[in-house]
Length: 319
Image (cartoon, rainbow, N blue to C red; front, side, top):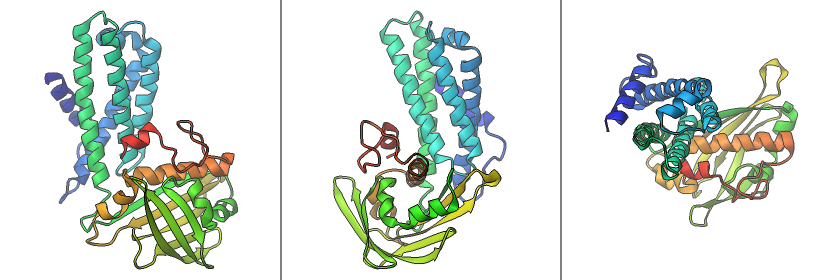
């Protein structure tokens, strides 16, 4: 307990004064904690990369310097991701939770295999467990902040695709392509020039359906849509296509809205997805990038490319 409390104090100290703070709600406090965790992650990662032998001695695990260096690179990546993501770096904080689980598994394995210093290894497990609690609490509260007080989920995410505006627009404009990179979608079928029918698979193999109208279509610039009355999941959104700086391709930016005031998140987006919405949209955009740049989605857990059922252990963790 003392170790966990010490780490909690260290993270709070590392959070820049006033970082992300706001009045009237707790979201700013969680963003400040996230930044503290980001700095902590970078500091720990640098120690593991620069002095893995010393770290291994501290935690009572010898001969695992290569593994600790790999963990260090992961920590630095997560920390930089948190600090550069801007407001609500939810996905990167969840990645820290995943890393914590790996760390605990590593330490637990070392303990079972006969650690040279069980006391140090047990202390390290207690320390990592304390950080895991902070990471999980911060990630969950950032996830909860996706929901406004009226029960409406509002999301914005973007990705740079190394393809032209025309290619990106043309692929997205054919809505029947969407299930290739949106895992929760089973099918999208055009029923008119601007009208489409969407079928999604919710947890428990429950099918959710709705009709949608495309309300704006500016070639190579913007596509907007909204669901029609009576939809199982009320939703609307816009995808914008912009030239990336330095001729690096196209910035694809999605702004989406799920649910109606009073409907509640459980009846809207979370009912459909069963996972953190910002993390899901971010992963959808990463898969869109893969499809445009390589022609397929990278396989995960033995699932064929683009298959709607393919999920990773990190996807499940974010649920």
